[in-house]
Image 1 (cartoon, rainbow over the protein chains, first blue to last red):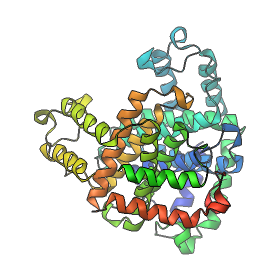
Image 2 (spheres, rainbow over the protein chains, first blue to last red):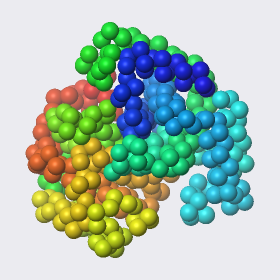
Image 3 (spheres, rainbow over the protein chains, first blue to last red):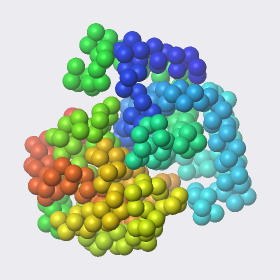
Length: 106
Length: 106
Length: 106
Length: 106
């Protein structure tokens, strides 16, 4: 993952774009890309989405998520495993098995 | 990255949640989490966002992005490097250096 | 407002699009349009956004919001005034004056 | 519609919140609310969404959309009718009838 981030930063720095990449605008970019991804599914059943569009937009999501993680010096692996551990408490197996309810409604 | 995905799938399968995780709803979840992340910056300058909230919501973004990539059997590394290569064509250094303009306006 | 909704439904029905406009996809469309609007502000200070783009994307937001309200037979006026009344309880003037904090943190 | 906007501005001004309501943050708020609305449909078929949640989140969407329109002195009626006129050109009936394709693919 770290060398992916390095590749993204190289691309950014060749264009002198770090000046635009404050954390707030990176978060905007992430939401915008997530919604371009969502557009692949609009008016469609899940299986009808164009996989090429999904691939390209999901790649953009990862790119901005990695750049944002880098801005905060987060270790992606660590923060995801941390969140899984928290979710194990919020969603105990015996209460959440087979239901899509939010933890506030379990 | 692959073992992160495995950990997320283990969490999912212990709860029997694969039945809910069609690609369309995973894309919805991704947009929703990206917007919970955005909320950390709402009415705030970038540097005022709570880093703990940023960390937790960004972790959720990665979780759903990884699960969606897995659903399509995408190799995250590959699709991101692929997109960087495409963006090098869309955003040539000499045209895009120091400007935040979209490629359609360069 | 009601005649705006009628105009939107006429446009929709001339194209036989009601079949696609289930509530879930209308909600997706609303989020997608809100993010196209957000794109007008990306990497920009608020005052640098192109007002023509803002106008067009905001119009799309209203269009899908009105169509979704219609799908539920909501009276827009009523549901907004209702929400303001609820927010007056969540955000009492004496606690929320001059602060952007969420009601959960007041 | 105008008196709805007046009511929202009164609520805002009683709390001295105009200082936070620059156009960029209003656009963020709109996307965030659109995604809270989307959450009502997550992991659900359209008809399973809780109508009370839909109503509340849709009201928030209208509230921020009206405040943003006000910030630009847009007449909501006018900008929506304008966009419908543009969409009639982008989506001619004979090409778009019965298909959910984007105008770029018609």
